[in-house]
Image (cartoon, rainbow, N blue to C red; front, side, top):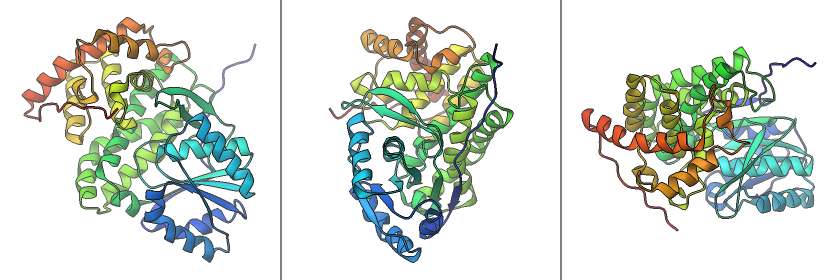
Length: 381
């Protein structure tokens, strides 16, 4: 009988710093002779000139394909064909998590290398060897797994600081889940996204991400409101992107991301950032675990100060909407979901009850801490 193995995976190279985008040609040159850049019009208008100049300096041609906004199966197939038509040998995603997930999947289908240049620190997608694919109407459809991680992840800290502060806040929400889910995976000895048991390294990086964010998130967010890059900003970018990226993939996912996926099954949540929905998942996971009340209270207070939702109201839901909560809970607990990496059985009814319970408690915690009352989120259908 084969014994279980432990494994950790990571991108070939990670580069981060102010002005890093001016060196993208230098780092791409060893990967291929004909890169294809993929970006939407907004992102390309902000960084396209700098990328083109860097590629020219490295003696590389510059070809760009437009990204259409959602990593759906149709968009992935379209991009894979565009890669083949261009004769590219490395696909480069320039933008946020949606662009990155689409390009990873397309690069794999086209049989070439892929690299990522995230312009926001809003998710931990850039470093991973998987893509999250959505349906045309924005519901979670599937994870696609690839045999390797990106060859390059390059993050220009100033570009991240120039982006709307909401993107950094969302990244904090995504990254805070990493340690909560990794420790649950460790307790249950479940298989991680990397295809084996958690390593000490993967679990340690997940915990380091948590520690860095609790220490640095609030001052970093204040700095990014003024588009400044400070040591705290650099640490949070690394936590959101590298530490969380390696930590979730090699440390493990559990309830928080499964509940995020469940939330996408209800149209009222559409329009929220990935990390906003994940934060509701993290809070719900703490409730499911029976975490100490003081821990749940601290998490609500801290993430409210960060600017993340801690109530159903803030994600377009109501505690008395039984049908919507059942839809979310059912989708969160399907057989293939990561919620089954929790160290105890979690049923749909458990998730629905936990979701209902957070509303009243979070409102009271925020009131006691003199924090703002929840503002209802209204989806734009």
